[in-house]
Length: 327
View 1 (spheres, helix red, strand yellow):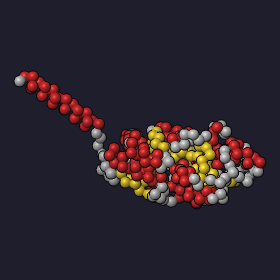
View 2: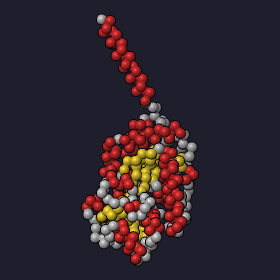
View 3: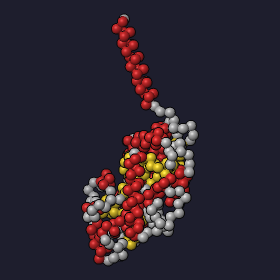
View 4: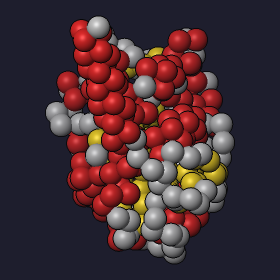
């Protein structure tokens, strides 16, 4: 009898200990206010998909529903301004990108209502949008060196497409020209799909662009991948050569993550870091990101801050050397 009572007491004690540990891991809701995850571009793209996947996980991590709000306009700066001028309690957070936090601050002629370099803080990175050099299926170019040789032999004749002036794609093409001492002609479009369509039909020679937009075309055979601009692209094409194989030091990609207003408390940043990390480590989220050409790649606020500073330095040098200005 005493043995049974002792066993029962031990069992109850263990249950109590487990319950206490579980409660210790649980955190209160971030706020009693609605939580908005603001994305500065239209619904339906790969960035929007990633934001919605994050919102699902963050709702559980933060203890209340997180709603994605698409606030389009001014290359994502309408959304950035909303967050920069908004509350500092973490209930309004920006799903930010390379373009609307690092390039836009370095592009002469850009009128900024807020400056992302001084009015926003990094919270963490969720993923990398890895880039590759692609050509049309009937292109005469087979390698990166072919393109470089053609550009050297015929200055200004080789063309590269991008979704617009000041885009990562534009600056990636310009970076290739600068690193190889060649002159290539930039052909800007209004959006990625228009650029890809003309590339596929042979209207332009190449593009260094995100694999998320081009993988379906590569698989269908309307585009050919020549080389990768980011080592993480090996997740999709393990046998593809790197641009850096022939252009040492060349690397290009875009990232997506979270930014908040200046004054965001460290404790709030920590909660959002935990939500980002949980999303990246979720197998279903990871699978869906990879299916859409994006590589899960979590970094904390301090690391993203450093990435943004490095991006601005790199893009500033490219922009100044080429004399690029906002249109």
